[in-house]
Amino acid sequence: MQLRVVLLTAVMTMLGSISDGCRTSPRTLTPVQRGEVLYRTNCASCHGRDPNRPGALGPAIAGSSRALIEARVLHRAYPAGYQPKRQTHLMQPMPWMAAHIDDLAAYLGASATDRPSVKVARHEN
Image (cartoon, rainbow, N blue to C red):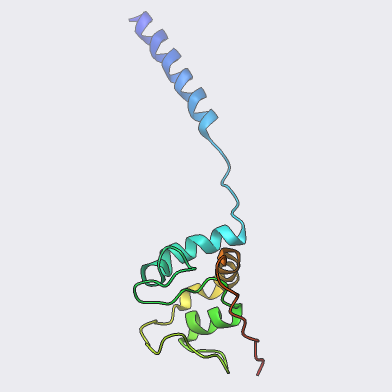
């Protein structure tokens, strides 16, 4: 019986040491990385996995300006003077992304590889 207690204590101590070694602090993501997570969870189903290429329902959006992203994502609108690539109106507003527009813009800007950036000036009212 004593041998069991000693072995059990040794195993528990060893497991405790292993689990302590597995603990890591949460990794801090960059704005581009956070934007990629947002894109993959909220945008990729329509715009495709690669934001440089058109998706099944949405156009390629890599390189889109922050103003365009904000207008489309939050308000289902286009900035003044912007000419849409498609005349569809499938995209719905996503108000839960309001605090994350900068991250999404960072990812889409960093993702632009094979086409020029879509630049739209921000209009202040």
